Length: 385
Image 1: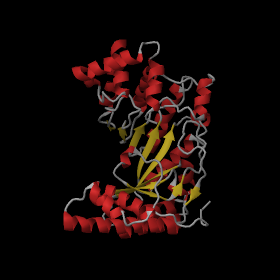
Image 2: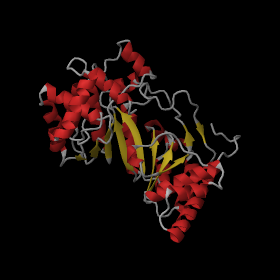
Image 3: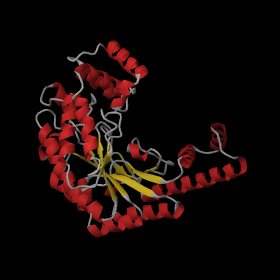
Image 4: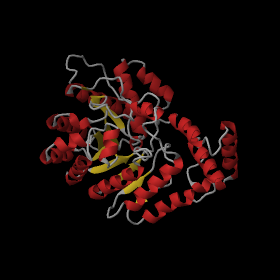
C-alpha cells in the first residue's frame, strides 16, 4: 500500500543495508518488508509495510543533489569541511533537509560511487515507477557506478524478463537476494515463503538481465536435524545459479523471534560453532562448476578469512575450515571467543601473543569451558544482530 495520503516529511532512510553497501547513499523506496514472516529475522517485526509515493522519492533525490552541490561549492571555497562547518550549514535547514545534508556529506566523503535502494524489497514497485526513479538518479548523479537493492526471489520470479531487462538498462545493476537455504524443508521451517526452484529461477533471471547477483546463505539455519540437507541443497541451488557473490551470514537467534521460541522449546536444535564449521566445509566442498566469489564479511561468521573465487580458490577456503577443525579443543575455544570479541580475524591471529592473552583473559572472564562454549558464543553473537 502506498502512503499517498501522508504529506512529504523530508528525506528518509531505512534501518539496514548490506555490509558491502557501507559507502553507498541510502535511498528509501519502501518502508519495511512486504513479507515479514521469516522466523529468524527480527528487523521489521511489528512494523507495517508501505510503498513511498514516487514523488516523495524523487524529492529525496532532489534534496541530496541540492545539498551535494552546496557541499561541493563550500569545499571549493574553503577546502575540506569539518563537523563544525557541517553543523553551521545545517543550522538554517529544516529537519528533512538536514538529513539530506548529512547523507550527502557522508556520501561525498565516500566518493559518491554507489547507491542502495531501501528497504527490504524495492522490486515490489511497478517496473515503470522503478525505472522512473532510476532515470531520475542517473540524471542527477551520472557519475554513480552502481545502484543496488534487496529483492525477494518470489518478487523477481513475477517480473517479466522484458521488464527486468528494462530495469537493468535504467541503471539497477546489482541485486541482493536472501536465499538463506536451498532446502525446501529448511525454507518451510523458517517461513521463508519461497522454494528452491523459485530461488533458482529468480537467480538465473537476474543474471540473464545483465545484473550482478549476491546470494546470502545462513549456515546453521537448518539446525541439527537438517544441517546436511541444508548444505547439500544450498550448494546445488548455487551451482545452478552461478551468482556473482555468495555471502555467508552465520545464524544468530535474537530473543524476539519465532525461531528463538522454537529453540527454547526444543523443536529447533541450534548448531554450535564446530557443527557450523563442518556444515560450511560440506557446502564449500559441494560447490562445483561456478565462478562465484564467496565472502564471509560479517562479525557473526567464525571464519572471516574464507574469501575467494571458484574454482581457483576453493582449496584454500576449505583448508581454513579443516585447519580449525584439526586444532586442539583449547585452541578452538580460544579462537571462538577471540573472534567474537573482535580480537581475531584469521586463524594466524592465534599466534599474536598480545591478542592471544586478551582472548585468554576473556575466556577466563566468561568462565568458558568445552561444556558451555556454545552458550557463551550465543550471547556474544546477539550483540551484533
